[in-house]
Image (tube, rainbow, N blue to C red; front, side, top):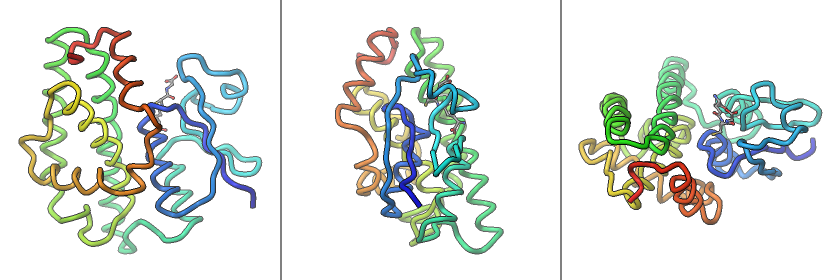
Length: 216
Ligand SMILES: N[C@@H](CCC(=O)N[C@@H](CS)C(=O)NCC(=O)O)C(=O)O
């Protein structure tokens, strides 16, 4: 089997989940970056949604990060879901829960006035409170075993750390369980290696273009 190839955008949290998973499993893969704001024709011909990630496996194109994740988990060892079906289902539910939160981090960047920022933060706080309550183990969501659900949340914490470091916005401060989870994830090698060089500067310059309210 030839190497799987991931089509990515350097700032995309959904692709970052696939990258972390590939690194956790030690898979040899190729990656090609596109600009999602000016996508090439070949990409639009391959991606049914016009979104990244897509994963090319031989002649097949997979899309949707959650599905790509499930495929990679089935094909490459070690399996990173709990084996108990009820636990696995519960983990998948929390993975679903984190997915729309990425829109929150994006909307925060896009907000150009205080009212819009406050609205995003209010919604975010509700979701963070739910996640904090669910995160009852340490160091990982399932305790000792690092798993898919940890991966699905990692890019979220990368972005929240960005807002804390560059925008003086500490969205985790009221959520002790999430602070511990975030600390563990941000120190993990696969997560450290999952962002491209210059990631923070790229986000900052994008925010400057947009006129993001939270950019100092
Ligand atoms: N549900 C999709 C979301 C992917 C997504 O929103 N990707 C963004 C970049 S982070 C994208 O490609 N946007 C381009 C567009 O919407 O045209 C997934 O999980 O793969």
